[in-house]
Amino acid sequence: MATTAPTSPGLLTGKRIGILLENDFVEEEIAYYRRRFREEGAEVVLLTRLWGHPELTFTGHEQRAPLTVDGDLESLGYDELARFHALVVPAGMVADRLRYTENVDRHAPAVELMRRAFRIPRLLKAFSCHGLWLVSAVPELVRGRPVTCHNNLVGDVRNMGAHYRDQDVVVDTDLITSRTVDHCHLLARAVIDRLGAPRALPSGQVSDGR
Image (cartoon, rainbow, N blue to C red; front, side, top):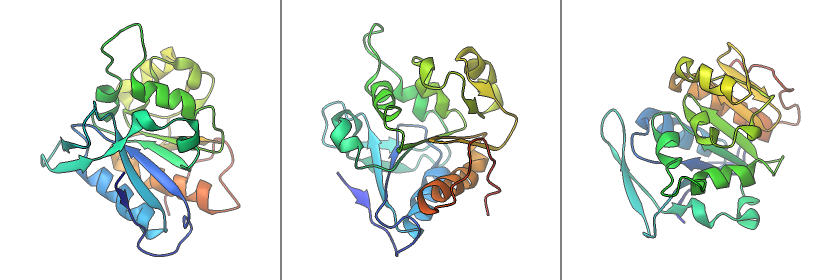
């Protein structure tokens, strides 16, 4: 599994962050996460459903930039998942593509990954913009919890039983959500604050991104 090595020691030294990928990702968002988390010393791993291939190359939404991924999310059982400190579901069409399942009576592998992840409270789950699409089939994961999301998803998250907040970023213990891709710096800041500082943001508090 290819990883992005940290550039220097920092608040996230020794931490491992997974970023889910598929076609139509937002290039600037993924580049920002990779750079920002590496600056704080984290190891960054790109993850996707590989469909039996050793690696897949995806195309970005705006510049059609290619990005090759060899991290297989289907291989992440509890033991392997426990090696991660955060999972990030980015904006764009990533979540919608990853929630595809050939058998409508079974959850997609990425959805099953989220079910396992939510059973590990110390593992941060961060969703950007449309990212909460990924858990629409398992609404119990966010039912009763405060979240934010893109305006287009407000009805969806309310139907999932989550409590929508009109904020750019919402932090609820192990669940971090941000409104749009333009707020990816706030989501990254919240992840860094939660993982890197003993004075982690309390439940529901909004990060100012500084």
